[in-house]
Length: 379
Image (tube, rainbow, N blue to C red; front, side, top):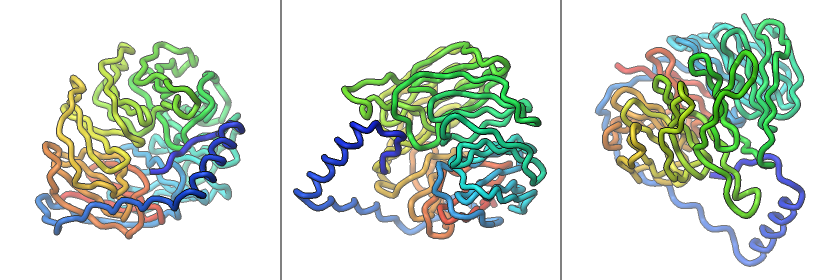
């Protein structure tokens, strides 16, 4: 998995460029490890494709947003659609005329995206309501909640806007490390608290005023240079009730009680994408495709699996007694939640799965890099 960061200071960019040139002069690039071979598929649980549609190519840090049975998706070229998760039919679809830098957030009625021109765009009933200029880029989908739109930008500021008028309500600046990951971060609501991932910390914010209520560190910046100190939290997260579990990039995983603002546990973990789980288990994939689990209550290590090594896995989705991982060839692997054994394997369009599968009502929704959107349901 490639490193996704933004921005590089000039001195660091020069140092990295020189280092890469020296390496190129000494040897050829190492061969990419061969993905693990797959055994013939044995469908131990019945799942069938119930619909498919298209949205356009997806290379942005995609986040698919769900509100009930409604699914919001967006493509690089600025197409945004709200779909019926049961049928895949468009509720509405709109072309914004501008490329998008982050995924789409929705509450089922209002949707919001951020363009590559640093504009926050709000959409309802298939038409644009308003646009607001942001002070920096954003790679995290806006959060639409309580008739407001919340945005986490690459300068680690959090800003709230009125959902109907676009009026800026407050901004919470956050001085931090100079590097930011060019991928989706953490922004969600738990009860009456807004949670944002800032420099390895889960920060609880009052959504009415922007005041910080508490902070809980899942990871702390360490190392001798800016690159080594990068510990941003990455989405998606796993939430059960008031407990939110998240991953700090290539550093730790941990769980926080959002009702009290206390850290429950943290463990060293090598990973670049988010986690998911249930009330018993937390699951995630490492960059080489090893799947790792932790006991949700204690953080103790559970089962691991090398069955999907080097298959470029997405973040997971726990689905009943199985867990789903998308891979770089467009397959969706359903594994046993208890031991990682294979339970089924689903095909899409042959291009990489762009983000963690999500659940819209009873339907699992999968989006691929070429813009295929697929709905799967248990038989």
